[in-house]
Length: 228
Image (cartoon, rainbow, N blue to C red; front, top):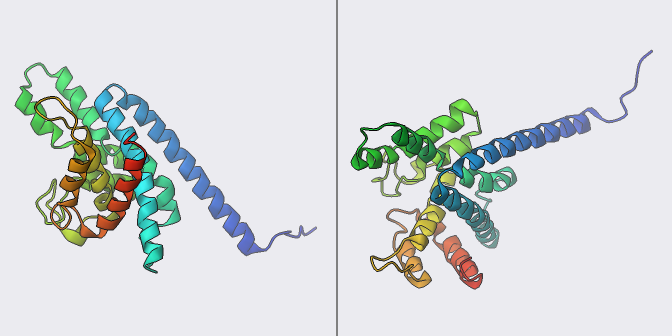
């Protein structure tokens, strides 16, 4: 006896694809939660990762807002938009590996440790790609978020459009949070206007100028939130 399929093949295909996407996102979320729990061992990196996750989600909203206003194709897909918070949470995961290595090695000098920390992007990308097999956007953001638009960043001195677009966008938020939590020699947190001017002056240099307007909107939004 032949069983009739109640739904058209194209509908079944769409449902299967949706189920696979949802399963992959659930897997990613579980991995990120595990890594984030491990990051709690280094509180500054953990807190930085949490803040940048919140900021990056909002920043991407403003990127899409600008795209729509200018009637341009969206620079990021809906699936990427769903991921950006998780991607931000693990962008510095390589630091955890390095800090653990430094702690276990008695003859490391402070300078040795600082030099190793410079390599956190490559260590992090390797962890995300090889050990956890996370999608390319996670790996590229971890690896390239310290590249500079003019080509003098690290680890590969990529320039302009050669920097993956999501890593390029995230570098704005990464710098913003770092600048906002940095203190003066007197021990005082820098005021928000000074932070804005610092970041704004780097577009076209360290930062890709395509993010200048979204950053302005993000900053105004964040200022209204009382820089929470």
